[in-house]
Length: 485
Image (cartoon, rainbow, N blue to C red; front, side):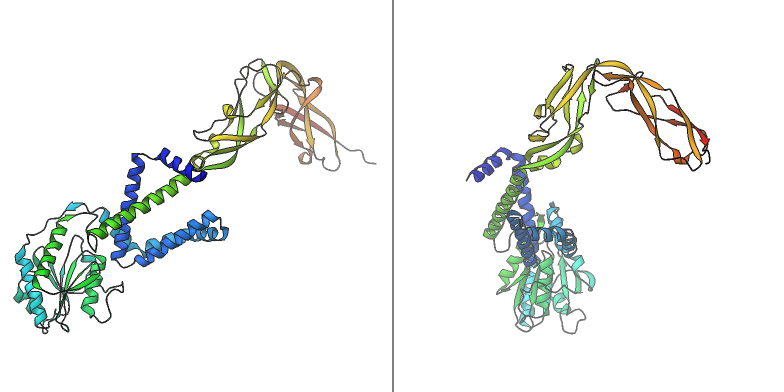
């Protein structure tokens, strides 16, 4: 109950007009996807994909690691495969989303609709098979094949001549577009949805196939049954009289005048409202699940460097200096994912520090954190800083000899220039004749004769040279031959 109240409170805190617009756009995208897949006859595949997504979501909630691994491993390959498989559907969705414009149409009226209706029933009475294609808002060019382009006035005589059994183009379809007969003998794609009964002929399957992928209206006249069927949205129905055909044609043309991404839903206004409401509910659920998950509090551990600032000029850090700490953070997942680890640091302000050893506590006051992220704890939670008054000391320089000379050779003496350096160190650091600074290694195994080498000085950060720069050290190694026994 507490978790539910927290989710509702989070939802109300983040919800605004931008979120409402976000949900509406998601709902529109879902609606267009559903309409397109349903009309193209591939909605069952889409349902299977949604079922797989639901299984993955449940596996994530229940922390089923095996299923999570399988889905995460296969998801990139599956995404590419889905884009390839559903290329026509995806293109159709974008076409619908971008098709908000008015098309120029030739004048149509009851005259043309009446002529087509009369011709259709005349052919049905004569038992002459025919297909009449009337394109809608969408182009059918990519779905049709063959045929002969013409530009003729639609008349009953012309249609009877084209579909006469002795006419070369009688087995194909005619295209009636912009009030003219634009093509004859055209081949249409066959239906892939399985909605058309096997008892119907090839013409019916072809009519259903074209209307599955476009918004065209197709009239099919059956030579076996003597009936007239109108196909749209992949479905067909038998029309009993000329008036119904004429009314359907006029409705189809009026609908095609203004192209909207959301057109009449198959089955009437009620189905349209139900589809839109369902898309809106799914969008709200999807958005809520994503957003509330992003706002759920998560934890994350990161390593941050420690930076010392505003150190007084008369003080210096002594001893071993801590350079990093492990921070345990909490906050919304979206904020934690956007957090740049390289911008995270612990700042130690030494502007008011005094000589001696003091304890620094790591808290939100000295950690740079984005808004909404809090510090739970740190490792270590605190550490000591030793500060001392700066003084100048002399440190002897000692060469770091590594390895052994070749056989027959021995070191006679080693001379270092300069033999000592003046340094600035905090009080408490040892100095004087008893303390030394080493040079970078001098490898004796590579020396065959008296040699002068130039080396760097190795010193801890708490010791700095007077003048700000370490001098180069000349190491002169003088060799001699060993006495043979």
